[in-house]
Amino acid sequence: MLDNIVSEILSSSKRAVARGITLVENESPSSSQLLKSLFKNTGRAHIIGITGPPGAGKSTVTNVLTKLLRKNNFKVGIIAVDPSSPFTGGALLGDRIRMQEIGTDADVFIRSMATRGSLGGLSRKAREACEILDASGKDFIIIETVGVGQSELDIAQTADTTIVVLVPESGDAVQTMKAGLMEIGDIFVINKSDREGADALSVALKTMLHLKMKETDDWDVKVVKTVGLQNKGIDELYKEIERHKTYLEKNGKLHEKRKENLIKQINELVNNKLENKFWTSERKKELEKNLEDIINRQSNPYDFVEELFKVESL
Ligand SMILES: Nc1nc2c(ncn2[C@@H]2O[C@H](COP(=O)(O)OP(=O)(O)O)[C@@H](O)[C@H]2O)c(=O)[nH]1
Ligand SMILES: [Mg+2]
Image 1 (cartoon, rainbow, N blue to C red):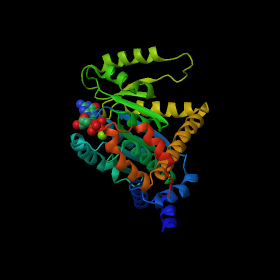
Image 2 (cartoon, rainbow, N blue to C red):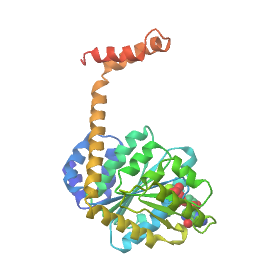
Image 3 (cartoon, rainbow, N blue to C red):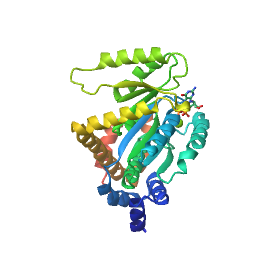
Image 4 (cartoon, rainbow, N blue to C red):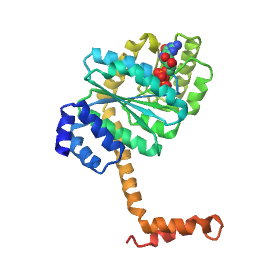
């Protein structure tokens, strides 16, 4: 059965890709076998992370950018990482409707992944879903994440090219600095440039980018103004993506970046394995047994952990 799904993914079957991602999402035991079989066929896609505050127009931009990529005959995979907060439920529905059109294209694959439990786990799953899409022959993979927390930043950082989408509304620039978005953007987009304040934000952003640039930085970050709803500025955005892609490939930076990501990925896998191995049912029972004592200050977490390590993993 697994052989089938592997060969079907390799020949770009949408159904097989969907099933593969479901296996990954459910942490099914066969998912690791699947990922092992696919890995040698990965590393070809260019991964684009699109992040920014909720409602900035990330999905809208993803939609029009995808259309442009398709015009250029590129195959596109999209992973929208949706925080499962009830507040964004409406946006998710909006995404679905907007994306329906491109979703019927045989060479576009769209999947949204919900956060459900831990965000940490989600970044791993998003990466694994990327591997499946990559193996299925997509040229570009877009990961859309809401740029609000560290884990979302982690997801964005697994991308080759990270795009930060902002809107002209005041305060954005300051928020961006705070959220650490300034550090991760390879390209900045001011979407909703049909609204007032786009030029002012553009100037402010450019100044900030200039200030933070080090002498050693040889990538010069550009600010692109777009109106996603009207398909404006998307050509320029695409040009910037190509420029960044070429920059990475020419300077051996892509190789470096992927090496760093690989180290992170391996670390994550090791941590996962260790954690699973560590938390035997005996240790979990010990934890249950001792929590009250620790809360009541009859014991402390430090001694307790020392003790836990002494428990034989039976
Ligand atoms: N005025 C204006 N509205 C836009 C533009 N792009 C997107 N929107 C609207 O902004 C809202 C949020 O867009 P969405 O793509 O879902 O944002 P996301 O949460 O960042 O993915 C939607 O109602 C869009 O129709 C734009 O360029 N101008
Ligand atoms: Mg969205």
